[in-house]
Image 1 (tube, rainbow, N blue to C red):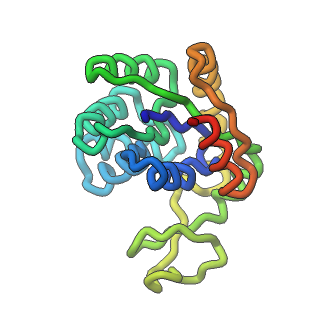
Image 2 (image 1 turned 120 degrees about the horizontal axis):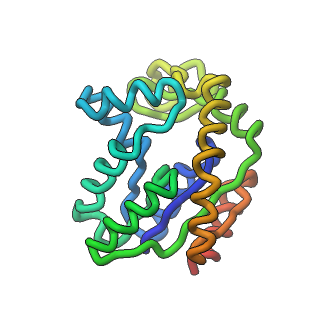
Length: 207
């Protein structure tokens, strides 16, 4: 099963992706994780991507498509995959379709999680990550409850940057939603509900 998981930053894609992976035993391809790893490793693509990510802007298609193409050729994607954070534009969607066609694959469903923008702003602005183990918590966590490490706020989770990210997302992704709707692959899911309710709806769509 090959799934595209759509939704604004903070809509809950990562949480639902984790549940889908456990349920269907498929690979998780998160462009956010791929990009952050490249930034941390200070690769040429990572350094190029960092200048855009720090401002809450989209990383250029050429950078993202190249990284995703490499990832899709890894063995763990053969049983299926969830694309989390990609594609974000119709250009990327067309490129993805071309790459998958060359691999003899196709997208089975595009699941879009919808959450009000101000809910997302407050959700992300309160998010904190552990520098040591990567645990995701909130501003209420003075230290990591898992390893007692330092909790910090990612620069792109600041309120002004989040609003800019959401604005960029809306402008670039609206045509993408219509692209998958036109291909009869789109499923709109209300993401502003308890996690298990959202997951149950996604499973019913995939069934």
